[in-house]
Amino acid sequence: MRVRLRVNGIWHEVDVEPRALLVHVLRDLGYKSVRVGCDTATCGACTVLMNGRPVKSCNVLAVQADGAEIYTAEYSDELMERLREAFKRKHAAQCGFCTSGMLLTAYYLVKRGAKTAEEIAEGLAGVLCRCTGYQNIVEAVKEVANS
View (tube, rainbow, N blue to C red):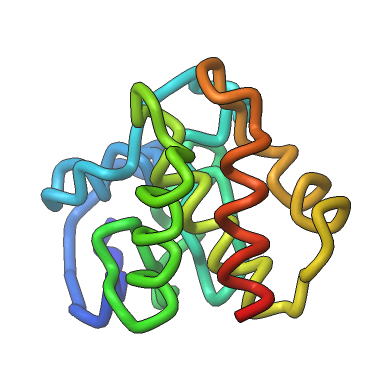
């Protein structure tokens, strides 16, 4: 099947198997920030923004994303750069495996107006981090959300 995806502002037209997962198609297109973690939609390392909302791309068929606007962690605008800088400043990333999912989810949360540590922590709950304990991640997102 032929699928059209707009990824980080660039249109891609690709032939995919009907059962192909979005995560694999994005990685094949060169978007390596989209991680394959658990393949069960549990860890959130594969999180992308699809039509403005965070989705776990290991749980989405590529054909379901036909015509969708998708953002990966390679996307760059002022808000994403502020989040990246805050993550660095607050030491919110250690091994980095979850970072792309955290950044995209944080991007969504800030755009939606989350400001408190509680709102941010609840919003980030779908992305698992095995290294940081979340405190520094929440602090980084809160700093950007309240600036």
